[in-house]
Image: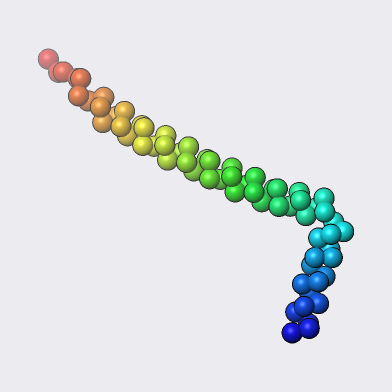
Length: 64
């Protein structure tokens, strides 16, 4: 138990001494996650709108 507690204390001590590095790492992880989620949402919305547009495009075509 004391062995695990030692690593937890060391983790928080390092976090305290390297605040800037810890903040930048957390910010980069959050930014990357946000970018992936937004790109996937944009792609899915584009796919749905394209399918709707193509489905409605054939309704007004008349072959003579």
